[in-house]
Amino acid sequence: MGNVAVIGSQWGDEGKGKIVDWLSSRADVVVRFQGGHNAGHTLVIGDVEYKLHLLPSGIVREGKLSVIGNGVVVDPWALLKEIGTVTEKGVKVTPESLKVAENVNLILPVHQKLDAALEAARGNSKIGTTGRGIGPAYEDKVARRGIRLCDLAHPDLLKEKVTNLLLHHNALLKGLGAEEVSVDDLYNELIAITPKILPFAAPVWKILDEAHHDGKKILFEGAQGLMLDVDHGTYPFVTSSNTVSGNAAAGSGVGPKTVGYVLGITKAYTTRVGTGPFPTELFDDIGETLGRRGHEFGTTTGRKRRCGWFDAVMVRQAVKVGGIDGLALTKLDVLDGLDEIKVCVGYDWNGQKLNYYPASQVAQAEVTPIYETMQGWSESTRGARSWADLPPAAIKYVKRLEELVGSPVTLLSTSPERDDTILVQDPFFS
Ligand code: GDP
Ligand code: IMO
Ligand code: MG
Image 1 (cartoon, rainbow, N blue to C red):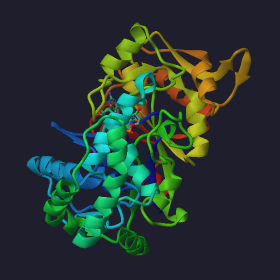
Image 2: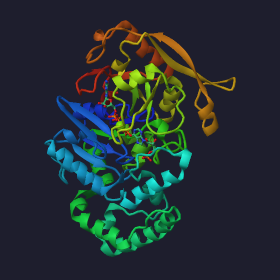
Image 3: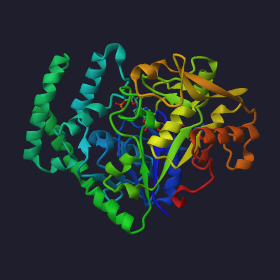
């Protein structure tokens, strides 16, 4: 029995939160390894809905250890606010139940200011970021001027680092016509938050190593999706981290063999929030219907998600690049009642047939999908808890997707509710 990593195989919002919550009953530790509070993971347990941004989705189950790995960028104010929100719903979060990597890089208010100013400066080529400061914080990390959680324990060093950081950013903010940030203000804000946030700091790599050696089961929770990966996605319309399963190791401090089975969370159609290419996007009534029935509004920003048909070429690519062993197919119920369902099986690029999604920004914008049309079903699949409850046409659709993307469906989700899930093969025993 090994560990499991959950990653999104499209443009995010595939239903990772629901699946991680469901799987977490079988795990001992749940670890976030990349992204930040740009993520929005929804869990529905009976009448209670949780929208988690930074906290791992295992947090709602008592007795599980929640870990925020070094690959995440953490806004300490947002984290404390989220702890407050879940506490109000009866979830207990303590420095015993939540460990944040001491070497994690922090998102600061200046990063959000920069995110907004840079987006404004992009004019018509905006990325449509979540505005959470993710990109600027990762830039600072790679540029080696970031402030890490462990720096809060050393006020003199912190002052020096804040001074250096703002020397750089104030020049940029000034150039962008935005207001500059005062060293004293930022330093004082950090000092004020230190007693509340520092108790969560821990050598996460060591905790995970010990857990693994003790035979505990670790569930790695990815954020965003493969097409938002900074290398493999629709660059530059991507997030600023690697969303592939390989990053579960680097982003939490374990070796690649510890990651285990990779489960690709995959929506039965496609959605995207923000700008960037989207070959199978629908601009008609069907697109509107998918959005309405699937409640396709961003969990973090509330923006309307763009909707389209399932793109088997893209998911097949995600299976390869992401090292996906099996799929958790979600939101099949949203397709109930459609006469016909289309699936993209290839692209046409100015008369040339492509069986993969090219890297060029120009090609990505120009390809048009080649569709295969399948028969829909009139019966409801919502809430189905066994294959026997699914109409034959729905089973045929799932089987065809498996064939096209080259990966088996090991879990099937038929509503937002935790238990409306069909288990085909347990990823922890694969
Ligand atoms: P994540 O970012 O991948 O965790 O996904 P989000 O939570 O942002 O968006 C997925 C949405 O779909 C949430 O509102 C979920 O409650 C909902 N959801 C998840 N699985 C299903 C499903 O099988 N059917 C339906 N109808 N909704 C689902
Ligand atoms: P979850 O984990 C969907 C998108 C933004 C934007 C791009 C860059 O809930 O699936 P960023 O703020 O990261 O610099 O924005 O990435 N994006 C997401 N889209 N789901 C997410 O997370 C996303 N996180 C970022 O909309 O297009
Ligand atoms: Mg989401």
